[in-house]
Amino acid sequence: MKKLIALIIVVCLAFSFAAGCASVDSTDEGSPAEATETPAQETAAAVETPALDYDALRALHADDEVVATVNGREITWGEYYGWLYMNARQIENYFTQMAMYYGMSANWSDSMDDSGTTFAQYAVQSAENTLKQFAAIEAFTDKNGIKLDDAALAERLAEQKKSDTASICGEDGTEEDLVEKLSEMNLSMDAYELMTLSNIKYQENFKAIYGEDSELVSDEDALSYLKENGYMSANHILIMTKDPSTGEELSDSDKADKKAKADEIYKELAAITDQSELMKRFSELKEEYCEDTGKTTFPDGYTFTEGKMVPEFENAVKALEAYEVSEPVQSDYGYHIILRLPDDPDSVIDYTSQNTPMTARKYWANADYAERMEAVLGETKLGYVPGFAQVELADFIK
Image 1 (cartoon, rainbow, N blue to C red):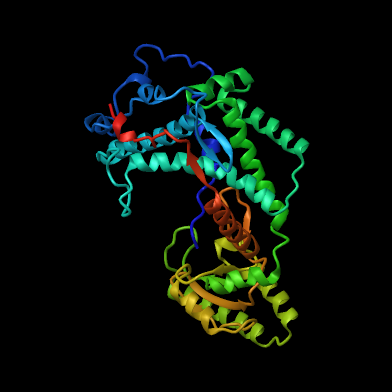
Image 2: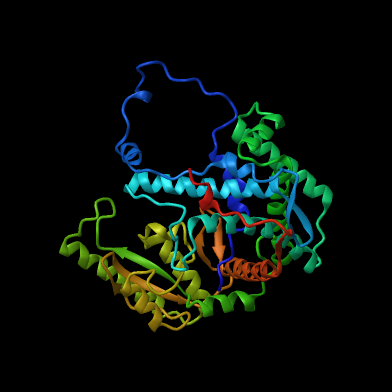
């Protein structure tokens, strides 16, 4: 599947990289803060990083001059330049990091991938895509007949603006402070509000189609995601043959005791023929004996693809039918008594950075939404007005 452009979520937060609006007191003379440069800083200083002449670039056109249209909406040079500036600055930050941490130089005329696209061209393309993404979200809303409440959107916008102001400008920051900070990044308040509202609409469109928690995704679609991507599910009871606190191997005598316990658990489970009783008893025995540190995060077992588990565990799961229990399987960790589970649309595959569980239902919704948004984005056209020449950033290298 094509990778959906990251829409505006990254862009929405891009200006948070800038310094806050509040003033910062300078350090006292002779303080540790002004001591010596780090090795990385010394490396960066030794490698020349290219910069653009943004003043000359900005002066190409008047801010209110219309330079393009996207789905009929006029784009002024001021708005276009703002997104071009933001994308270009992010690339310059990349140049600096490459110099600082790897001692490598990069230039605007360098190709950034096998396609031959240069960094200069990519910055322009990214600005164009940002503008197209805003229009695509609006088009997606209309195309799918989604009705968004204007009052609710305005309330969300106000809340986000308040949060961004506090985050960037401090708790005492004002909207005027936010305007000033945006201005430093060559973004207007109108551009900020368009960006923020588009992000909100992007989220609301998702909820309208798939539900707040992807609960509107059918079992059939979620199960198809698991099958098409080669997922398998299993629960296990791990009897460790290593000391969990030190990682050292247990004595042969202790290992023998562990093996005996694993055999005992298996024999009890293998004798159960009723699926409900098996699931219940397995859960009880897991709670009592399992020494897997991941059992609190994945209490109902693991849903995974090839290569994600130790080979002994994975191979044993592949050999089992749903609701079948394996004899103790030995790995470097110890003995696993494995219960193969049927595919479940609500099985937890992993967690987001915010510790939100990601199920097959959610993964299917994300993939489907990405594909549908990609299609609308492909239909979204940006056209330059007659007489406007596409910017060549390489011409503005200092």
